[in-house]
Image (cartoon, rainbow, N blue to C red; front, side, top):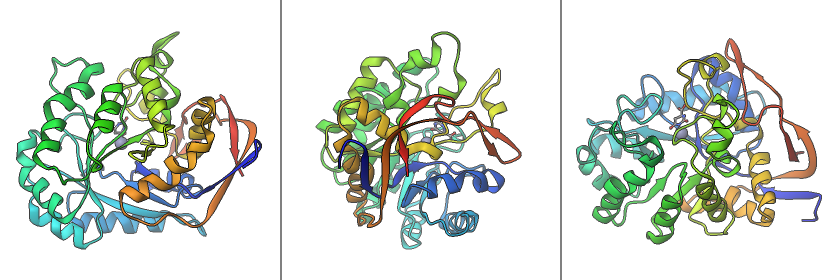
Length: 344
Ligand code: DOR
Ligand code: ZN
């Protein structure tokens, strides 16, 4: 590495939403341009709750990939109150790599999520036994809990207990947003890891709310105070292998975001690695990017590192104001703003 170019092993995205149908066709190429593999989130409508649906969704993704582009989709099951241990073992044999806990009502397409963690205890037992990771959207949903506290309360009320009851269960605490989550992951066993998004590294709630509401920065879990952002930057750039890349790129059409009831999700797939490079460079830790982006996630999932590479150069460019999306347009994260690293 010199100070102008940076060559990395190809990264993987350990948390990605690509939707289906026309939306899928318009976003999948962006991830394929830079990622080797991607953990595909199952919160479609209806959700991906069994191995047959996971296989069909995998096929749809593979056939939506533009010619000559490669991306290996890693499929995930959506847990419901009625998921059984048999569904899990069947999915495991069908190369489904993980299952995702959405607390019911926590986020987009989560109405069929889990209403009480006890409802999936036999499922967690089965996952622990076969070594299938549990991916967690870590927020409680009780209406009296302030939206900025929902992650911290989830740690106290749900996750701590799960970790205690299933000490061998591998867990990825997805898109962490608080210093509470960072501390929890540091203090937990090696079975517990976390993904961190580019928006939670580059933004805090002021970026969303000062000077007017910026709907394209609204996601769940919602952006927090700057002190939490700094804890996430510290964790991501620490070189600790428990923290790795997961964009949570979550495409929604412009009109669905710029609405009286705008939906949650930040679209970062087209420039994901450049966004992370920006955050790491600002923290003076660009040398720590490769571990976070290209090694630690694969190690956690016990998969090999990618062998090809990609190169970034330190050169300013401006993020496009919009991309085409299904039958409309989509506004990417940091639209119109300048980034300092460019993917070659
Ligand atoms: O902001 C978010 N958008 N958070 C999620 O958990 C889901 C995602 C989506 O699917 O749009
Ligand atoms: Zn997500």
